[in-house]
Image (tube, rainbow, N blue to C red; front, side, top):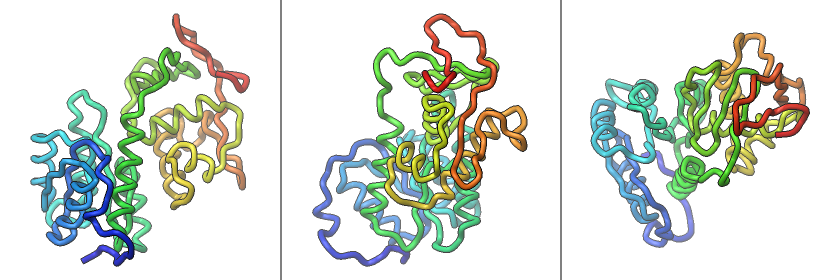
Length: 265
């Protein structure tokens, strides 16, 4: 059992204002049952799987809006399940993943983020905290872009916030939910130094959390948009302060697009 004791209202009192389909993957039936119960009482439709192959089969069958995925699964671990979920999008945006990891296993948490998890919760955890994290990720993934939001174009990158589509030199970029939001944030704030606390607050919507989450996502984003991630020219590290997006020579602007330069969008 890897769920923390907590005071206050129990699961029967959780407000039912959630929507969407959630797939819960955990080989511990007690954890799976409690998590599913909290999510259902929050208004979600929940499917459950106890191992990797069953998770992939359920994901293909039910097309969940989000997967709650235990890292330590028998046979096929959560990292491999996450990789395969990312590789089978079938033209759709990758399904968001909230990973469950053991407390103290920082390397495993980082690996989870590296393979594309959007968030993680460490065991033992509060089911209500998990529900809040699930809602936060889904809110980000389903939030509509402002009407008429222009295409952002800079340094070979073209980002369409409304369509949640990004290309580099004309090739589609496979970005996770958080990577896309992080890229858009940098494009909208060129030349500004953004510390990790600010990025966590503005991109993740968290007032507190593990700042290594930001570090890993910046590294992943660099691997996809920089020509040489080992020597990044777009997302620069400002030692002791954070990161600064520095647009290079802007790409030609297509009709209806706006350039990102000189601190303006």
